[in-house]
Image (cartoon, rainbow, N blue to C red; front, side, top):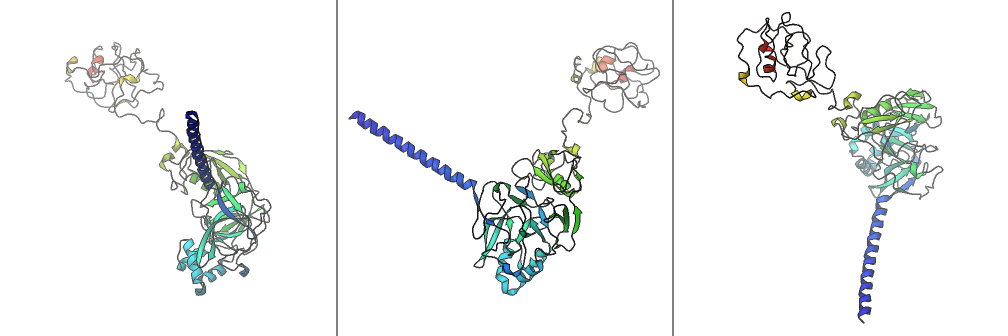
Length: 478
């Protein structure tokens, strides 16, 4: 009976532990699933929305049929050359028609919901639309989309297929889906952890690859123009001024080679701007977009390499606090990139300024340490008039050794503190060692130039030398 009762207790204990463990594992699995996946709805080119702000039969926008392009990294800045496409067609998005619709009093409720998403007032809609630029997506792009339901803008994450026409703001951020007028905001989830749902007529399109989708982050500066690629002819580039719809486009040849600028030592924001101005795209190490103040350490390919328009340059960065310009503010977008030399350390050899006081005797390896302060009575006071202060143009280095000088006067003292003894080799005229005596000119032809100094460590030592006829020996210091 005792054995059976013991087994029952042990069995119940084991069962309880197993149950607790299973609950713990299931809880972790549920949390892990929630952390990994962001459900996004696929929106295919040319497929009308079920809950649009604007009736898509009204001809507000026109999508194109193109294949999604590959990108280096899932996060792209809005000023990336070739991020968006263009066309010779004069209007892929009728901005004037959208403005008339949103300013019509009959659509006031829609206009209020539309403006609220974009953080503007209904009175500010015309001015806001005037600053937007129509483009075509060249990548399958993640955004936060908005349907219009029961008088409100209802947000949902969506994946827009390449070829969809959108309006972008002055920092290259998609803000409106042209065909339906739905407002757009940046996708805020993890681009590597998405689950795409194809429904409501949006079938999976050819060439879809969940691992190649992109999300757009605002450029670190306001743009004057956007560099596009003609979706019908990739050899033709289009410079489109911001706020225009195609009437002022200027074409250029995307095959023209351009040299990678030297961006090592600059901030990430400045490097991105310089590469974009050259027509080159930016890629970077790591998952997240580096802050504008992160210091660039290298580029791949290196400076001087010639690339086509829109080709990528991989930047390696050291962090966001380099040079005290970390964070998103940083120095991104500044007109003058910092000197690459400014990133060098300031505590290395040869970088410190000369000291304003004489260096300690320990700066010369191997030399005996003189007394820290000689007694005042070790040298009788000198009452003679000091010689005129006319220092030589190049004073010799100080003599820190103790042997007496018997053949010549010690080197003259200048009016300022002597230069420090560093690890570099001393001048050949007077080596600063513990055994070599001074070899300067005799004191009879080169008088000393400063008043007597009795507080330095070597005055009492120099006073033991042979008499000098032209100048008192006590005036010599180190």
